[in-house]
Length: 175
Image (cartoon, rainbow, N blue to C red; front, side):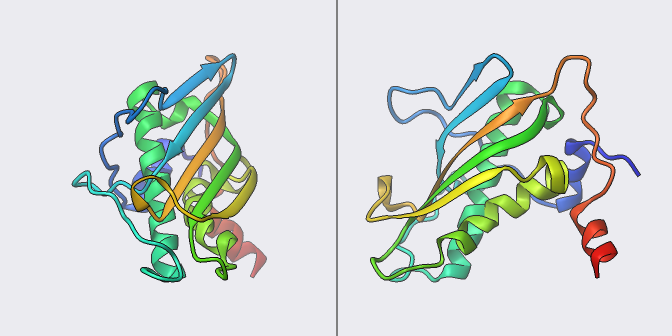
């Protein structure tokens, strides 16, 4: 069954937090030709509160993965508020994830999977998975646990973005 990114997002049962306002001299997202560059976003909860703490000291890897998913939701909120619909996005090009962590923490990819798995649910396993970097940082603004920036490809005005199979359907096929 063909589904749009908007329909796939609704199936997740998640709610979008408010799109954050710039806290400096930058744009939350910028369109250049058919690419959307999303500035670094943090994990904003529905109430507008940020998830904070150093991973490996204040919070563990599982909690940081939840923070990365919440950061993904915050990015989706920015996209939707600026573009009107997640259906305007054709695919994820790249995700760059930064984890505020201790020197000996080594599970950066696991943490950033929280965001990557969300995008795969929304745009499917082909278009929702792009190139990615996951790195550790000594600190992040406001002591947030995770910061993520991303690049997306816009759908052509004539394209209708539909996903033929969900991540779950593909996992079942491969089982």
